[in-house]
Length: 489
Image (cartoon, rainbow, N blue to C red; front, side):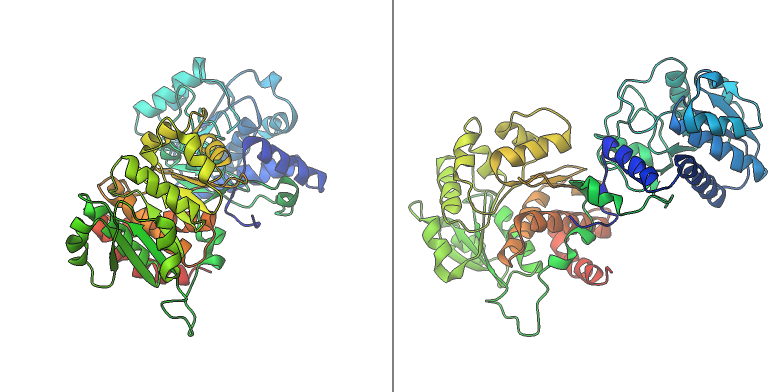
């Protein structure tokens, strides 16, 4: 993984980044000053001076809060500051910045919020591992019961930075300011929905610390995979751009057709649907640019993959949950070509997932939603942990679909996709995603990069279309999205 702003740091990794920065000669007090000052500036840029309640916890987040309060007060803002715990108990940089604060320090309580027109949540950072209680819980509940905008320091208090889990309660924020790099909890739900706009200002931590940390998590952005996108060259032709085979079903014929159109739109030079003889006329009546061949019950997928130099295969959409689909899935894997296994093909291995995993030797992408995931894997943890464990167990790239889709590779890398449109919650959108992945695999992208790219394109196309989206609209948005991608620097 290359160094760029796509990295996501766990709480422990962020602590390591701070320590390495200090070791490199940057005083921790300077880092806290830069953090607090940057938040104060963002607040001043966003709002005109108004009554602000700054809520400070007993640790470094509280220290950031004291810096924010000092800078806002110096800019003429009326500031009330509430502290959780005794001022005398503060230590280190938090104590140093409390000593620099010349205003009143009030005990944290809901009364601090009276008359406030803006709230700064500096109670706890991303490392909180226990539910909020006492005064902190009461204040957070009061924030959520009101309508005053709240700004989070690092992450909304009560959200665990490694998972996005809410520990009892957390405030709904309109702006979250974190430092150096985001954390998984900024992207994973439900924490993501509480963060509002997320800003990551530079506070002076050198990017060279990432070489020592070597983070495995990242945000799924084009910077992660754009240099590997298979743009055609002037000498390209349909045979150099790959040939995807999509196994079509007998009755739910729309699924394979949606996948095929997406594979073609994303650049596959040829796409063939292999369909049961009785369904061939339906497929032939579809898009004229897709090829259709008969697929008898006795057809050998291995042989079909060797014919016509087919370079990737998709099994599952609309195929039916039965022994034949299971057989065809195994046949696709035996071909050793890059394989996407989706929908019905996943469900055929419920209770016998080890049989599936035993056949995975070549490039393979599994694309389960939560229900399908539960049929294959018995792993605990948050979405990121579960996807990573599943990838290691299966030997495949896992695309755990949802509002915060996680893409995990067997080697430990993982990407989290932010910003899936709620309009994707409609029939057929998963088939389109599977088609995008198989289309990119056909053109030679690796399994992890193809899955990450496809998930991003899928979400971006839905975002671009907006209200009223149906599955058929996604592929039609791809030309505009791909043009946009070409311009990403």
